[in-house]
Length: 455
Ligand code: F0G
Image 1 (cartoon, rainbow, N blue to C red):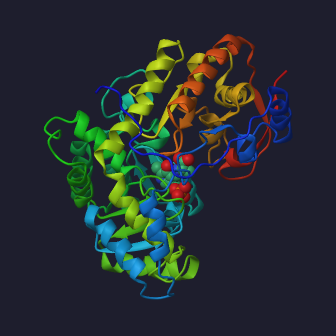
Image 2: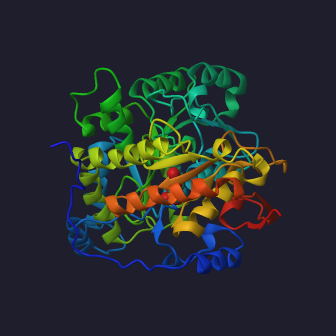
Protein backbone atom coordinates (compact mmCIF):
# COMPACT_ATOMS: atom_id res chain seq x y z
CA UNK A 1 0.00 0.00 0.00
CA UNK A 2 1.23 3.49 -0.85
CA UNK A 3 -1.10 5.45 1.44
CA UNK A 4 0.65 6.54 4.61
CA UNK A 5 -1.98 6.53 7.35
CA UNK A 6 -2.06 8.08 10.80
CA UNK A 7 -0.57 5.14 12.76
CA UNK A 8 -3.09 5.40 15.60
CA UNK A 9 -6.84 5.46 16.19
CA UNK A 10 -8.68 8.01 18.31
CA UNK A 11 -10.03 7.11 21.74
CA UNK A 12 -10.78 10.54 23.14
CA UNK A 13 -11.82 13.67 21.23
CA UNK A 14 -12.06 17.42 21.84
CA UNK A 15 -14.68 19.46 19.94
CA UNK A 16 -13.50 22.46 17.93
CA UNK A 17 -15.74 25.50 17.60
CA UNK A 18 -16.55 27.29 14.40
CA UNK A 19 -16.54 31.09 14.22
CA UNK A 20 -17.50 33.41 11.36
CA UNK A 21 -15.12 35.63 9.43
CA UNK A 22 -16.83 38.72 10.92
CA UNK A 23 -16.27 37.38 14.45
CA UNK A 24 -12.63 36.66 13.68
CA UNK A 25 -12.10 40.18 12.29
CA UNK A 26 -13.32 41.59 15.57
CA UNK A 27 -11.26 39.14 17.63
CA UNK A 28 -8.14 40.19 15.72
CA UNK A 29 -8.84 43.86 16.51
CA UNK A 30 -9.45 42.99 20.17
CA UNK A 31 -6.04 41.30 20.51
CA UNK A 32 -4.21 44.06 18.60
CA UNK A 33 -3.45 41.60 15.81
CA UNK A 34 -1.18 39.54 18.07
CA UNK A 35 -2.29 35.93 17.62
CA UNK A 36 -0.78 34.94 20.97
CA UNK A 37 -3.62 36.96 22.52
CA UNK A 38 -6.42 34.79 21.08
CA UNK A 39 -8.41 32.36 23.20
CA UNK A 40 -7.80 28.86 21.90
CA UNK A 41 -11.53 28.17 21.68
CA UNK A 42 -11.70 30.93 19.06
CA UNK A 43 -9.21 28.94 16.96
CA UNK A 44 -10.37 26.20 14.61
CA UNK A 45 -7.02 24.62 13.79
CA UNK A 46 -4.16 25.67 16.02
CA UNK A 47 -0.78 25.58 14.28
CA UNK A 48 0.80 28.15 16.58
CA UNK A 49 3.23 25.58 17.90
CA UNK A 50 4.04 21.89 18.06
CA UNK A 51 5.19 22.44 21.65
CA UNK A 52 3.21 20.67 24.35
CA UNK A 53 0.21 20.45 22.02
CA UNK A 54 0.51 16.81 21.00
CA UNK A 55 -1.83 13.98 21.97
CA UNK A 56 -0.54 11.53 24.56
CA UNK A 57 -1.02 7.81 24.02
CA UNK A 58 -3.11 5.45 26.15
CA UNK A 59 0.18 4.06 27.50
CA UNK A 60 1.29 7.55 28.53
CA UNK A 61 -1.97 8.18 30.38
CA UNK A 62 -1.55 4.82 32.08
CA UNK A 63 2.04 5.72 33.00
CA UNK A 64 0.76 8.93 34.58
CA UNK A 65 -1.26 6.89 37.05
CA UNK A 66 1.96 5.15 38.08
CA UNK A 67 3.60 8.51 38.80
CA UNK A 68 5.08 8.65 42.29
CA UNK A 69 4.79 12.08 43.84
CA UNK A 70 7.45 11.71 46.54
CA UNK A 71 9.48 14.86 47.04
CA UNK A 72 12.80 12.99 46.97
CA UNK A 73 13.91 9.72 45.40
CA UNK A 74 10.75 9.03 43.38
CA UNK A 75 10.84 5.89 41.17
CA UNK A 76 9.30 8.11 38.47
CA UNK A 77 12.62 9.95 38.39
CA UNK A 78 14.47 6.66 37.94
CA UNK A 79 12.22 5.62 35.05
CA UNK A 80 12.65 9.07 33.50
CA UNK A 81 16.44 9.00 33.86
CA UNK A 82 16.68 5.48 32.41
CA UNK A 83 14.54 6.45 29.40
CA UNK A 84 16.66 9.53 28.72
CA UNK A 85 19.96 7.70 29.14
CA UNK A 86 18.77 4.90 26.87
CA UNK A 87 18.84 7.43 24.02
CA UNK A 88 21.22 10.12 25.28
CA UNK A 89 24.11 8.65 27.21
CA UNK A 90 24.87 11.60 29.53
CA UNK A 91 26.04 11.22 33.13
CA UNK A 92 23.80 13.78 34.83
CA UNK A 93 20.12 14.23 33.92
CA UNK A 94 18.49 17.25 35.53
CA UNK A 95 14.72 17.53 35.06
CA UNK A 96 13.18 20.96 34.48
CA UNK A 97 9.67 22.19 33.76
CA UNK A 98 10.44 23.00 30.11
CA UNK A 99 13.29 23.70 27.70
CA UNK A 100 13.85 27.34 28.52
CA UNK A 101 14.38 26.48 32.18
CA UNK A 102 17.30 24.27 31.11
CA UNK A 103 18.65 27.19 29.08
CA UNK A 104 18.21 29.61 31.98
CA UNK A 105 20.13 27.30 34.32
CA UNK A 106 22.86 26.64 31.76
CA UNK A 107 23.44 30.32 31.01
CA UNK A 108 23.23 31.35 34.65
CA UNK A 109 26.47 29.33 34.83
CA UNK A 110 27.99 29.81 31.38
CA UNK A 111 26.62 33.21 30.33
CA UNK A 112 27.50 36.72 31.48
CA UNK A 113 28.82 40.06 30.19
CA UNK A 114 31.41 39.70 27.45
CA UNK A 115 30.64 36.07 26.63
CA UNK A 116 29.79 34.84 23.11
CA UNK A 117 27.72 31.76 22.26
CA UNK A 118 27.56 30.25 18.74
CA UNK A 119 24.76 28.00 17.44
CA UNK A 120 23.49 27.02 13.99
CA UNK A 121 20.50 29.25 14.79
CA UNK A 122 19.52 30.09 18.35
CA UNK A 123 15.85 29.60 19.09
CA UNK A 124 14.25 32.73 20.55
CA UNK A 125 14.23 31.54 24.17
CA UNK A 126 17.85 30.38 23.91
CA UNK A 127 18.83 33.77 22.55
CA UNK A 128 16.69 35.42 25.24
CA UNK A 129 18.39 33.53 28.06
CA UNK A 130 21.87 34.21 26.66
CA UNK A 131 21.16 37.91 26.18
CA UNK A 132 19.48 38.23 29.58
CA UNK A 133 22.76 37.03 31.12
CA UNK A 134 24.61 39.82 29.31
CA UNK A 135 26.22 37.51 26.73
CA UNK A 136 25.79 37.64 22.95
CA UNK A 137 24.24 34.91 20.76
CA UNK A 138 25.51 34.29 17.21
CA UNK A 139 24.04 32.21 14.37
CA UNK A 140 26.50 30.33 12.14
CA UNK A 141 24.23 28.19 9.97
CA UNK A 142 25.43 27.32 6.45
CA UNK A 143 24.50 29.78 3.70
CA UNK A 144 21.89 27.39 2.22
CA UNK A 145 20.09 27.51 5.58
CA UNK A 146 19.01 31.08 4.94
CA UNK A 147 17.88 30.39 1.39
CA UNK A 148 14.24 29.20 1.33
CA UNK A 149 14.62 27.68 -2.16
CA UNK A 150 17.84 25.72 -1.65
CA UNK A 151 17.16 21.98 -1.69
CA UNK A 152 20.22 21.11 0.45
CA UNK A 153 19.31 17.97 2.46
CA UNK A 154 20.74 19.34 5.74
CA UNK A 155 20.01 23.04 5.76
CA UNK A 156 20.41 23.13 9.53
CA UNK A 157 24.14 22.35 9.32
CA UNK A 158 26.67 24.56 11.06
CA UNK A 159 29.08 26.42 8.79
CA UNK A 160 32.25 24.70 10.00
CA UNK A 161 34.70 27.20 8.54
CA UNK A 162 32.82 30.08 10.18
CA UNK A 163 32.72 28.19 13.48
CA UNK A 164 36.49 27.70 13.41
CA UNK A 165 37.23 31.34 12.67
CA UNK A 166 34.62 32.39 15.26
CA UNK A 167 36.32 30.29 17.93
CA UNK A 168 39.75 31.58 16.91
CA UNK A 169 38.49 35.18 17.05
CA UNK A 170 36.47 35.02 20.28
CA UNK A 171 38.80 32.71 22.21
CA UNK A 172 38.17 32.59 25.95
CA UNK A 173 34.91 34.51 25.72
CA UNK A 174 33.13 31.44 24.28
CA UNK A 175 31.77 29.27 27.13
CA UNK A 176 30.33 26.51 24.89
CA UNK A 177 29.30 25.64 21.35
CA UNK A 178 25.63 24.82 20.69
CA UNK A 179 23.75 23.18 17.86
CA UNK A 180 19.97 22.95 17.54
CA UNK A 181 18.44 19.80 16.05
CA UNK A 182 16.33 20.32 14.04
CA UNK A 183 17.04 23.97 13.35
CA UNK A 184 13.65 25.40 14.32
CA UNK A 185 14.29 29.09 13.63
CA UNK A 186 15.77 28.15 10.25
CA UNK A 187 12.72 26.21 9.07
CA UNK A 188 12.83 22.96 11.04
CA UNK A 189 15.73 21.84 8.89
CA UNK A 190 17.89 18.91 9.97
CA UNK A 191 21.57 18.71 10.85
CA UNK A 192 23.56 15.77 9.47
CA UNK A 193 25.32 13.29 11.71
CA UNK A 194 28.56 14.16 9.93
CA UNK A 195 28.06 17.85 10.77
CA UNK A 196 27.22 17.10 14.42
CA UNK A 197 30.40 15.05 14.71
CA UNK A 198 32.49 17.73 13.01
CA UNK A 199 31.12 20.41 15.37
CA UNK A 200 31.98 18.12 18.29
CA UNK A 201 35.53 17.70 16.99
CA UNK A 202 36.07 21.42 16.46
CA UNK A 203 34.64 22.19 19.91
CA UNK A 204 37.03 19.66 21.44
CA UNK A 205 39.99 21.11 19.53
CA UNK A 206 39.20 24.52 21.00
CA UNK A 207 38.51 23.09 24.47
CA UNK A 208 34.81 24.08 24.50
CA UNK A 209 31.93 22.00 25.85
CA UNK A 210 29.55 21.01 23.04
CA UNK A 211 25.85 21.30 23.95
CA UNK A 212 23.00 20.04 21.75
CA UNK A 213 19.56 21.64 21.90
CA UNK A 214 17.81 18.33 21.23
CA UNK A 215 14.12 19.39 21.16
CA UNK A 216 13.37 17.56 17.89
CA UNK A 217 16.02 14.85 18.03
CA UNK A 218 13.82 12.04 16.67
CA UNK A 219 12.70 14.03 13.63
CA UNK A 220 16.34 14.96 13.02
CA UNK A 221 17.40 11.31 13.26
CA UNK A 222 14.66 10.30 10.81
CA UNK A 223 16.05 12.78 8.27
CA UNK A 224 19.55 11.39 8.84
CA UNK A 225 18.23 7.89 8.18
CA UNK A 226 16.47 9.02 5.00
CA UNK A 227 19.05 11.39 3.58
CA UNK A 228 22.55 10.72 4.85
CA UNK A 229 24.72 8.26 2.94
CA UNK A 230 25.33 5.05 4.90
CA UNK A 231 22.58 5.64 7.50
CA UNK A 232 19.52 4.02 5.93
CA UNK A 233 20.03 0.59 7.53
CA UNK A 234 20.40 1.87 11.07
CA UNK A 235 17.57 2.21 13.54
CA UNK A 236 16.47 5.69 14.54
CA UNK A 237 17.37 4.95 18.19
CA UNK A 238 20.88 3.99 17.13
CA UNK A 239 21.31 7.21 15.16
CA UNK A 240 19.99 9.21 18.12
CA UNK A 241 22.58 7.61 20.44
CA UNK A 242 25.31 8.40 17.95
CA UNK A 243 24.25 12.07 17.74
CA UNK A 244 24.41 12.59 21.50
CA UNK A 245 27.40 10.43 22.37
CA UNK A 246 29.77 13.03 20.94
CA UNK A 247 28.30 15.91 23.00
CA UNK A 248 29.09 17.15 26.51
CA UNK A 249 25.51 18.04 27.34
CA UNK A 250 22.07 18.89 26.06
CA UNK A 251 19.07 21.07 26.71
CA UNK A 252 15.67 19.57 25.99
CA UNK A 253 12.05 20.50 25.82
CA UNK A 254 10.04 17.30 26.27
CA UNK A 255 7.07 19.24 24.86
CA UNK A 256 8.43 18.43 21.41
CA UNK A 257 10.02 15.02 20.84
CA UNK A 258 9.29 13.92 24.42
CA UNK A 259 5.62 13.53 23.40
CA UNK A 260 4.65 15.30 26.63
CA UNK A 261 2.55 18.36 27.41
CA UNK A 262 5.19 19.73 29.77
CA UNK A 263 8.75 18.98 30.85
CA UNK A 264 12.37 19.02 29.81
CA UNK A 265 15.86 18.44 31.05
CA UNK A 266 19.41 19.65 31.15
CA UNK A 267 22.00 16.89 30.73
CA UNK A 268 25.70 17.26 31.42
CA UNK A 269 28.74 15.01 31.67
CA UNK A 270 30.89 17.34 33.75
CA UNK A 271 30.46 16.69 37.49
CA UNK A 272 31.25 20.23 38.63
CA UNK A 273 28.99 21.88 36.07
CA UNK A 274 26.19 19.47 37.02
CA UNK A 275 26.64 20.33 40.71
CA UNK A 276 26.33 24.04 39.91
CA UNK A 277 23.29 23.36 37.76
CA UNK A 278 21.61 21.34 40.53
CA UNK A 279 22.25 24.12 43.04
CA UNK A 280 20.54 26.53 40.67
CA UNK A 281 17.76 23.99 40.04
CA UNK A 282 16.97 23.76 43.75
CA UNK A 283 16.81 27.54 43.90
CA UNK A 284 14.54 28.00 40.87
CA UNK A 285 12.76 24.75 39.88
CA UNK A 286 12.75 22.14 42.63
CA UNK A 287 14.59 19.21 44.15
CA UNK A 288 16.85 17.35 41.65
CA UNK A 289 14.62 14.25 41.47
CA UNK A 290 11.66 16.18 40.10
CA UNK A 291 12.86 19.57 38.79
CA UNK A 292 9.78 21.61 38.08
CA UNK A 293 7.65 18.57 37.34
CA UNK A 294 5.16 16.23 38.97
CA UNK A 295 6.18 12.57 39.19
CA UNK A 296 3.44 11.73 36.71
CA UNK A 297 4.99 14.13 34.16
CA UNK A 298 8.31 12.29 34.46
CA UNK A 299 6.51 9.00 33.72
CA UNK A 300 4.67 10.50 30.73
CA UNK A 301 8.03 11.60 29.31
CA UNK A 302 9.66 8.21 29.97
CA UNK A 303 6.89 6.48 27.99
CA UNK A 304 6.90 9.25 25.34
CA UNK A 305 10.59 8.68 24.66
CA UNK A 306 9.89 5.01 23.95
CA UNK A 307 7.19 5.99 21.43
CA UNK A 308 8.82 8.92 19.63
CA UNK A 309 11.50 6.79 17.96
CA UNK A 310 8.85 4.53 16.37
CA UNK A 311 9.63 4.59 12.67
CA UNK A 312 6.01 4.20 11.51
CA UNK A 313 5.18 7.29 13.50
CA UNK A 314 8.14 9.26 12.13
CA UNK A 315 7.36 8.26 8.53
CA UNK A 316 3.78 9.53 8.94
CA UNK A 317 4.94 12.63 10.84
CA UNK A 318 7.35 13.81 8.16
CA UNK A 319 5.00 12.81 5.31
CA UNK A 320 2.34 15.24 6.61
CA UNK A 321 4.74 18.13 6.11
CA UNK A 322 5.87 16.92 2.70
CA UNK A 323 2.23 16.66 1.62
CA UNK A 324 1.52 20.26 2.69
CA UNK A 325 4.68 21.51 0.98
CA UNK A 326 3.84 19.65 -2.24
CA UNK A 327 0.29 20.99 -2.32
CA UNK A 328 1.16 24.59 -1.43
CA UNK A 329 4.01 24.55 -3.91
CA UNK A 330 1.66 23.29 -6.64
CA UNK A 331 -0.70 26.16 -5.73
CA UNK A 332 2.08 28.74 -6.20
CA UNK A 333 2.64 29.47 -2.49
CA UNK A 334 6.37 29.87 -1.82
CA UNK A 335 7.39 27.49 0.96
CA UNK A 336 10.71 26.53 2.49
CA UNK A 337 11.95 23.38 0.80
CA UNK A 338 12.57 20.61 1.52
CA UNK A 339 9.80 20.24 4.12
CA UNK A 340 10.98 20.61 7.71
CA UNK A 341 10.38 18.16 10.53
CA UNK A 342 7.72 19.77 12.69
CA UNK A 343 6.33 22.53 10.57
CA UNK A 344 5.85 24.05 7.15
CA UNK A 345 7.28 27.51 6.64
CA UNK A 346 5.72 29.90 4.14
CA UNK A 347 8.02 32.52 2.64
CA UNK A 348 6.07 35.72 3.26
CA UNK A 349 8.84 37.97 1.91
CA UNK A 350 8.46 36.42 -1.51
CA UNK A 351 4.70 35.90 -1.51
CA UNK A 352 3.86 39.37 -0.15
CA UNK A 353 6.70 41.21 -1.86
CA UNK A 354 4.63 44.43 -1.81
CA UNK A 355 5.01 44.58 2.01
CA UNK A 356 8.45 45.76 3.26
CA UNK A 357 10.21 43.61 5.89
CA UNK A 358 9.69 46.16 8.66
CA UNK A 359 5.98 46.29 7.87
CA UNK A 360 6.01 42.57 8.83
CA UNK A 361 4.68 40.60 5.84
CA UNK A 362 4.65 37.41 7.93
CA UNK A 363 2.36 39.00 10.50
CA UNK A 364 0.06 40.22 7.72
CA UNK A 365 -0.13 36.69 6.31
CA UNK A 366 -0.71 35.02 9.68
CA UNK A 367 -3.51 37.44 10.55
CA UNK A 368 -5.29 36.99 7.23
CA UNK A 369 -5.02 33.21 7.44
CA UNK A 370 -6.77 33.39 10.80
CA UNK A 371 -9.39 35.79 9.45
CA UNK A 372 -10.17 33.58 6.44
CA UNK A 373 -10.12 30.14 8.04
CA UNK A 374 -9.68 30.34 11.81
CA UNK A 375 -6.21 28.80 11.51
CA UNK A 376 -3.59 30.13 13.93
CA UNK A 377 0.04 30.23 12.75
CA UNK A 378 3.10 32.11 13.88
CA UNK A 379 5.34 34.78 12.33
CA UNK A 380 9.02 33.86 12.40
CA UNK A 381 10.65 36.91 10.91
CA UNK A 382 11.30 40.53 11.76
CA UNK A 383 8.67 40.63 14.52
CA UNK A 384 10.43 37.76 16.29
CA UNK A 385 14.03 38.61 15.47
CA UNK A 386 14.10 42.23 14.26
CA UNK A 387 14.80 44.00 17.57
CA UNK A 388 18.46 43.86 18.62
CA UNK A 389 19.88 44.19 22.13
CA UNK A 390 21.35 47.59 21.19
CA UNK A 391 17.86 48.85 20.33
CA UNK A 392 18.22 48.91 16.56
CA UNK A 393 15.57 47.32 14.35
CA UNK A 394 17.08 45.28 11.52
CA UNK A 395 15.09 43.00 9.17
CA UNK A 396 15.47 39.28 9.94
CA UNK A 397 17.25 36.93 7.53
CA UNK A 398 13.88 35.53 6.42
CA UNK A 399 10.22 36.52 6.76
CA UNK A 400 8.51 33.21 7.45
CA UNK A 401 5.13 32.08 8.69
CA UNK A 402 5.27 28.81 10.53
CA UNK A 403 2.51 26.25 10.35
CA UNK A 404 3.60 24.01 13.21
CA UNK A 405 1.94 20.62 13.31
CA UNK A 406 1.04 19.29 16.78
CA UNK A 407 1.98 15.62 17.18
CA UNK A 408 -0.81 13.03 16.62
CA UNK A 409 -3.48 15.74 16.95
CA UNK A 410 -4.97 16.61 13.56
CA UNK A 411 -6.05 14.37 10.68
CA UNK A 412 -5.74 14.44 6.91
CA UNK A 413 -8.95 16.46 6.43
CA UNK A 414 -7.70 19.20 8.77
CA UNK A 415 -4.66 19.37 6.53
CA UNK A 416 -6.79 19.55 3.39
CA UNK A 417 -8.78 22.38 4.99
CA UNK A 418 -5.50 24.24 5.54
CA UNK A 419 -4.55 23.80 1.90
CA UNK A 420 -7.97 25.07 0.78
CA UNK A 421 -7.53 28.14 3.03
CA UNK A 422 -4.29 28.99 1.24
CA UNK A 423 -6.20 28.86 -2.06
CA UNK A 424 -8.54 31.57 -0.74
CA UNK A 425 -5.62 33.53 0.66
CA UNK A 426 -3.94 33.48 -2.75
CA UNK A 427 -6.96 35.27 -4.23
CA UNK A 428 -6.70 38.06 -1.62
CA UNK A 429 -2.94 38.25 -1.53
CA UNK A 430 -2.56 41.65 -3.19
CA UNK A 431 -5.01 43.29 -0.79
CA UNK A 432 -2.94 42.42 2.30
CA UNK A 433 -1.30 45.30 4.12
CA UNK A 434 1.51 45.50 6.61
CA UNK A 435 1.53 46.54 10.25
CA UNK A 436 3.37 48.88 12.57
CA UNK A 437 4.17 47.93 16.15
CA UNK A 438 2.43 50.35 18.51
CA UNK A 439 3.78 48.89 21.76
CA UNK A 440 6.49 46.35 22.61
CA UNK A 441 8.17 45.00 25.74
CA UNK A 442 11.95 44.98 26.18
CA UNK A 443 12.61 41.28 25.45
CA UNK A 444 10.90 38.68 23.22
CA UNK A 445 8.43 41.19 21.91
CA UNK A 446 6.54 38.84 19.61
CA UNK A 447 4.63 37.26 22.51
CA UNK A 448 2.94 40.44 23.63
CA UNK A 449 3.57 43.38 21.29
CA UNK A 450 0.62 45.26 19.78
CA UNK A 451 0.14 45.94 16.10
CA UNK A 452 -1.77 48.57 14.11
CA UNK A 453 -2.65 47.91 10.48
CA UNK A 454 -1.00 50.33 8.06
CA UNK A 455 -3.59 52.25 6.10
N1 F0G B 1 14.78 25.19 21.74
C1 F0G B 1 14.06 25.05 20.62
C2 F0G B 1 14.73 24.65 19.34
C3 F0G B 1 12.68 25.26 20.66
O1 F0G B 1 11.96 25.11 19.54
C4 F0G B 1 12.08 25.62 21.88
C5 F0G B 1 10.66 25.88 21.97
C6 F0G B 1 12.87 25.75 23.03
C7 F0G B 1 14.23 25.52 22.92
C8 F0G B 1 12.29 26.11 24.37
O2 F0G B 1 11.54 25.08 24.89
O3 F0G B 1 9.20 25.97 25.02
O4 F0G B 1 9.90 24.01 26.38
O5 F0G B 1 10.72 26.27 26.93
N2 F0G B 1 9.94 26.06 20.96
C9 F0G B 1 8.51 26.26 20.94
C10 F0G B 1 8.10 26.54 19.54
C11 F0G B 1 8.00 27.23 21.92
O6 F0G B 1 6.94 26.93 19.33
O7 F0G B 1 8.89 26.34 18.61
P1 F0G B 1 10.27 25.36 25.86
